[in-house]
Structure formats: structure tokens, C-alpha cells
Amino acid sequence: MISIDRSLSLPAHQDRTLIEVIDGSGRAEETYTYRRVRVLRDRLAQGLTLPPGTRVGLVAGNTPAWVVADLALLAKGLVEVPVPLAFSAEQAVSLLRDTEICLVDVPGARRLREWGLDTGRTVLPIDLDELAGAADGAPHGPAPSTTPAPASLSYPTNPDDVIKVIHTSGTTGTPKGVRIRAAGIEAVVDSLATVIPDDAFQRYLSLVPLSLLIEQITAVYLPVRTGGTLVLLPPGSALLGTAGARAEDALEWMRGARATGAVLPPAVVSALDKAALKEGEGAAGALFATPAPPFLMAGGAAVDPEALRRLGARGIDVHEGYGLSENSSVVAWNRPGEIAPGTVGRPLPHCEVRLSEDGELLVTSSSLFAGYTVEDPTSRPVRDGWLHTGDRASIDEAGRITILGRLKNVIITSHGRNVSPEWVEGRLRSCRQVRECVVFGDALEHLVALVLTEADADPDLVRGEVLGYAAQHLAETDRPERVVVVADGPELRALYFTVTGRPRRHALFADLVSAHLS
Image (cartoon, rainbow, N blue to C red; front, side, top):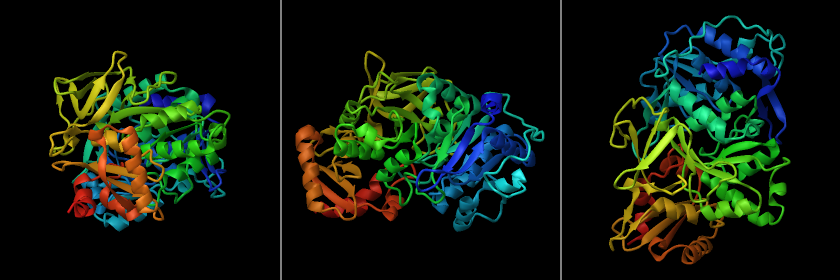
């Protein structure tokens, strides 16, 4: 990641704001210039007297300390193991098993204690005030020096060196680590820089945990590369995908922060679509406090193409993409000016794709991973240089990819009909009162939809809306005949969804759906 160090050190960038922490109204509460972050990075790196290649846990929230620690670990050639704070103790243990040292901020230290993992390993607090040695003790005060002490930086010289171990969440079991190479991150950053305009990162708003690889790339590396600013939510705010988060809150944060770019989960795209419908004409001006709508990116699960079309008609473009950790994140993205709703766009310049005989999407690229820390039945193999993604897809004449669903998630009803649940779920999320949807149907005569709603929603009204939408917009084979309505909440999300928002289908069916089928 030498290119990131060069961008961080560019003279033209030094007095710009790299990190801004906002308060509840969107005003800047703390700011860190490029110069200050570089000083802090170098001083933290100087204290990490570990051999290159050593695995170091990073247990921190979306804080300036996370960013400084990430850059320091890259600079020292250490292997970063970021752990989501939303993980259970069992999941955290699975990632930290081979680490003897952890870097933590205040939320991370608290979570490590709650997991019972603060003993038996070295825990190093990331104290930015102490690193800066600021006389006034203010976290946003001036850096004490513009010439940091030499940090003995030892960036990986071999592009195949592993620099990160990123969790990948299956729908069952504990996560396994995906070993990410230095060259893989460089290739993805280089490719994305050619398809996303630089001004998207003038004020990039981070809404999801920085422990996710895609967020590290879009929230840290691309802003640094373009001289932009990473905007962080107020301390203690619920990040999307974690307990207490609401998709509607993300819309308020984007407006308050005057965001120029963000990556949105599908639930936020649905919330944005509903808000734009409510505003009517002039929705873009009403929803955003910027001269033009922010550059919005979406991924992680299917997005309703009709929602994307409606937003586009109101001047709000959402660029849907596709990626997976085994490719160091992004594979394909809808580029500006060529958005095709329903597709995830064309492959990035460094990627090639093709389909297997059974319609599985295969990917080859310069960013493929270096293997897993542990193999299990959900592992995605690489054969003859091609990653078998496990996703069914189609590719049109223009090279645009449409994801049809997971190979193993195909529903086969008792009538022998094949249905892709993700396709149906993406469309039912457009219903006004639906926050999340999971569809079932294996060995059943007809499909069943489990929908999550606000706590005060009327189940009968929600049920009627979903069935009515399905009757109007879905083919008979894709329509649920029954709708199970459940109030959404943090405990439910923690039990039945992974940290990246994927449903644990077997557990949901056993605990919440099966009783309604008798």
C-alpha cells in the first residue's frame, strides 16, 4: 500500500481535512488533517516493534483511532485482523485465535472485556492524545510537529504478501478469515479510481462498520487517494447493520453531513425510494443539502430495479455493484452514465468474468485472495485461476452482469418450481412498511414471505400490502401465498442476521416461520 502512503504525504494534501467527526446536527466536532493523521500514524507505527507478517487484531469502532491504526499496520507490514464490534464472543474468538496482540480504542476495549478476551494477549490502547503529545490535550488541536520521527516503515515489498485477514460471514456457523494480499487491495483501489469520480470522496460519509473490507476501501483508501475527507458519525451512533440502526436514520445523516458519497445497503436504498416518493417533484433537493445528489453506491444484496428507476427519474442515481471478500471486495459496478437497473454493471478493469455450464459466475483478477484461514463447506474454490463465486448469474451482450441468486439458495417447491429467493426479496422490500424480507419455499406448495416491520405496524395492513404488490408485480411462481409479519428489533437482528445483514435462513424458518405452516 505504498501508493496510499504517497497520497497521505502529498504536500498539497497536508492542510486538508482527512477525518471529520460530526455531532448530532452534522456539524464538525473533531477534525484531523492529513498532516496530523500522518504524524499519529508514524508514531503508532514506531511503537509496533513486531516482525512483518505478525497478525494483529484491530478491535475498534468507526473512530479516528481505527483509521490511524489501520494505516500504521499497513505501514509496518503487519497483518491486520479487524473484528466487528457486533460480533458475538464465539465469532470474535474465531478471528482472534492466531493473534497475540490487539489494538483497541475505547469502544473496542470495552467490547474485548465483554467477550472475555482481554486476558491472555497483549492489549494496546490507541490513545491519539498521547500519541500527539498535544499540550492542550485537545483531540482536534494542532499537531505538535510537521516532521514526524522516522517510523521504520516496512510496507510489503512482495505484492503477494498478506496484509489483512477479513471475516466472511456464512449464514450458519462461525466466520472464517479471508487472507487479502497487498496487490489485491491496490488493484481494487486502482480500478475503482477509474470508474468513480474523485468528487464523490470530498465528503464521504461512513455508515457501516470499517471492519468491512469494502468500507475500508471506499471510506479510507479512496478518500486518501483523492485528497478527500472521511466523515464519521457521532460516537455511539448505531452503524447500519448493527443493533439499533434504522435505514431512515441514514437519510438524516447524509443530509446533515452534506455527504458527497456513501455506500448504502439495500434497506437504505428502499428507504430512500420511499422518501423520494413522499417528497414527489424536487425530491433530490429536499433530501440532500448539497448542490447535487451525492454519489451513491449500493451492494450486499439484491436491490429492487424499479426502485432504482424511480430514483433515477428524480435525479437520484444509485450505482449498484457486486463483490466478495475473496476478490478483495468489488468485482463489478454500474458506472456513472450507464446505470442499468437490475444489473450490477460491467466488471472492473482488473477483473474478467464468465459463466460455468450450470450458470455459476466465475471471476479471475489480480485481486484474488490468498486462501482462507480455515476451510469449511461454504468455502469458494479457485480452480485454474478462476474463483467459483457460488452465485448464479447472466451476462448480457454489453458485458453487464445480473446476479440471479445463490446456487445453494435456490428454492424448489413441492411442485418442482425453481425460485431465487433473493430476487423476490429485493422486490418485496419496496413495500412501504417492509424493512426486511426473507422468502422460503423448499418442499412447500407455495412460497412464504417473512417480513420485518416497525414495532407499531399493523400486521394485517402489511400483509395486505405485500400480497397486493406481489399480485401486481411478480409472476405467479414468485408470489408468496403467506406472509408472516414480525416486528424488527436489535435482538432479532443479532440472533437471525449476520453482521453483514445476511439472513440465517434455517434459524429464521425454524423459529419464526414453521409454526405458521401447520
